[in-house]
Length: 351
Ligand code: NAD
Ligand code: WQD
Image 1 (tube, protein in one colour):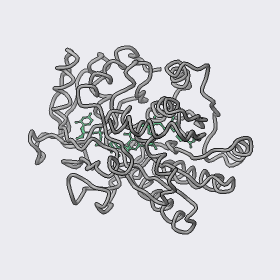
Image 2 (image 1 turned 90 degrees about the vertical axis):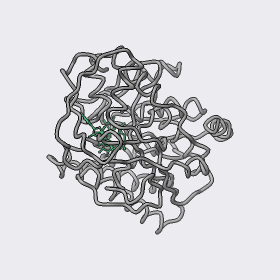
Image 3 (image 1 turned 180 degrees about the vertical axis):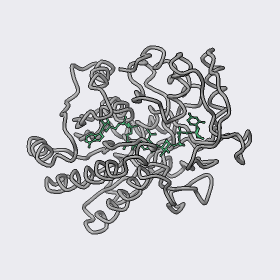
């Protein structure tokens, strides 16, 4: 209901949005919701972790010929300048970045350079062209091992356990300081919890390269026969069944959160931070068992040692986003596991 309200309110103000990283998992789903709310979008992506087929599928879902797309790196100042000289953007939703936790430990320089230089270049070009509205993809990882559960936005940030997490934490600080120095900026930091699921059409979804790091794509690859079994990383945590507890959120809900966040930009919010989660914590075995039950498939698994850097429990208090943005997650665990499987089953090799 609240998402519907948000949608209705959005209809009255259409915006032209620059979507960096729009060919990726969350970006592609967000494009659909932006168009559904009446906005227009232009995608900038260097395709380092995505396939342009995702944008063709988005166009199919929306019922349009194509999505405006520039194969461009956000570190490419000249390319961004040219694009922003050609057209005016009301706001940017900045998804572009590298996100693999393990890889960031192996290649810290590459992560700091891509994520930090990319964002610094982007916001500089934006302000030079008078566009000072940005929604930034942050992460629950900035809370480290959280001092309160459920986590509110007031919870202090913590020690990240990997360079990827630090890029998010540092970029939040950069954007906060810029907004403080120049109040014309409107900065919305969205801290995502654990995005899963896929568009219900099964046309787009998560398309990881190589061995998946995250739980849900690992489960779907086991279910489809690409991997023999899932390793459950630890069953001796202080949680109801001993396995790690997380706040999984359907990617369509997450995508709608961005459309609702434009409302904060519209009312010239200055700096705002929102958790985007459901507020429910599910364990690894809850997810595996729901996947098996809802989809009627087998997911062999065995218990493995804990994964370095993991915490026991992490879930949000998403009340602020509901109160201030009219956004609330609509989908539950059944839709999450159903749509994850639907995407994998229809696209066993990804795009
Ligand atoms: P993704 O890898 O599917 O999408 C990111 C996109 O950015 C890719 O299409 C990639 O090609 C592009 N990109 C990377 N570096 C670029 C650059 N320098 N210039 C232009 N394009 C570039 O990832 P996603 O899951 O859709 O995540 C989107 C954003 O949300 C990322 O910033 C990520 O860190 C953040 N986030 C993701 C999760 C998650 O679990 N998926 C959780 C919290 C935050
Ligand atoms: C979830 C649970 C694992 C894989 C990561 C990033 C975070 C954010 C979201 C970007 C944990 C367990 C996992 C497997 C398992 N990304 N697991 N077997 O670690 O909560 O968050 O993605 O910002 O920054 O750290 O998500 O999906 O990796 O793990 O048992 O093969 O599943 O131990 O309890 P995580 P995840």
